[in-house]
Image (cartoon, rainbow, N blue to C red):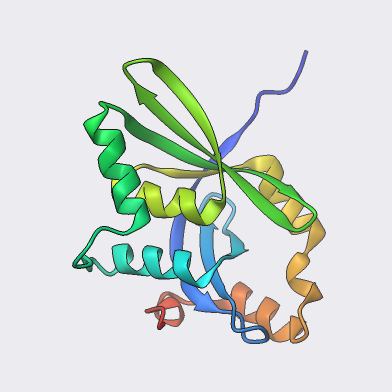
Length: 166
């Protein structure tokens, strides 16, 4: 008999810049185990996420806004997004959508899935296996300034995770 796949609710703790590479990182948090899941993302996706977190409506719809509006017009709803895999230091996600034709799972980059979830008010999850793999891989240690980032992530306070600046 196979083990059930456990998903863990995640909260967005903030956006920050990797101190070494200046690449944006979205920081997800699992309150049940007080574990952090940092995911390196692109600048455009970080901007889309930051705008939504800060409650800023762009003058014209961004790609994630367009996708959300299209889904709504088609009678579909984003039910949840799940960080579903960590393979070769790359995270993968799945967007769960329910519409008139039933439920559909769509492969996605985590950053796009999170940006869409924020617009849809949908919850964000990570598979427990992904959290365990991320902890075991300790991919943050591959950074040039490894100890500084690792220590910062472990000791991060709410005010440290403030606004992401473009």
